[in-house]
Length: 402
Image (cartoon, rainbow, N blue to C red; front, top):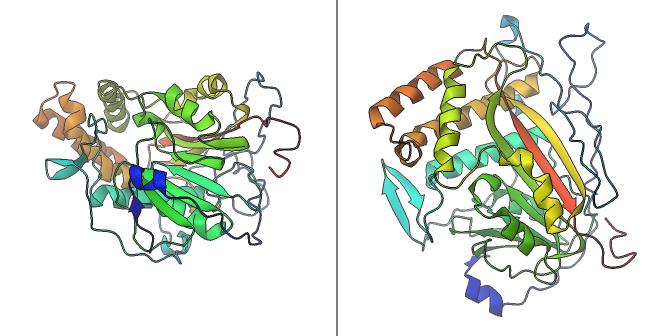
């Protein structure tokens, strides 16, 4: 049984180098692009798992600019595509764990939801059981989107140390620990809401990533859904880069982030669309908390300023709802829609209060957005950004296994 550690406990506890085992390589396989609806139908190719092309750019120079991997248009479905078996599209889950009920940090409660109140209470999104279930659902959605790849960074087959920053329920850290038994995987979060029973090579640490990092010589530092809530990206990336406290020379950082702006490629979403306007207002509200919903598209200069090179960016489109033609994308879109339906009621509290929007008006806006989400004729989607970059090797040959 591996329990969450406090920062002080971690300082006095040495990390045992785990035994290396053979494991399949996390090879970034090529993903074929979905059929563009503007082109005539082609003979049936194997279905794709992500709305993404693979013209991925790997600049070699430290100053080379990144040309992001762009996602193609998602083909909308027809009425005949309305029925599909969601269960057949879901990933299997062979990891069982009992959730810890021992929460030993500070919380506050508003409108029946629990919020983290650590430090300056900078996280205006709940962290209760409902939110934890939503985060696990988003994890399942991204695993479907990426064909089961928990990350794209080419860290080799035998990594030794992996950090999951903002681990939440710990589901990503646990799955990576299962896949890479050679690695010690440490999940870091402000609250100890992770399982007690986890793989022997997985542990959790209650800590603040904006402070100096404890773990050293890390092969991969992973962030997911963290960029929006971090008020000081340069400091956090600096901690991630700075030797010897964090990444080893040749190590990788990866940030997997939602660009919180609904988009549309075919003109079916108007400027007055209730979902779009709700997210536009949410973006303005989060700015009051020092947060940015558009920052995921703007991370390259932060990575380069911190010293990282070999910067990659993949952009994947995720439909909002079940309007896509491809069966897998419909399942992914359903997950995204459910995540939104669970999320938007939280805007009525702290976020919209910061804009002096009354509770009654906020409830009306949320209700209109809920109704809009049920309209399959509006083809909304989100862009998900997958940034990964490498810390330069201090001398030739140190990153040959990458």
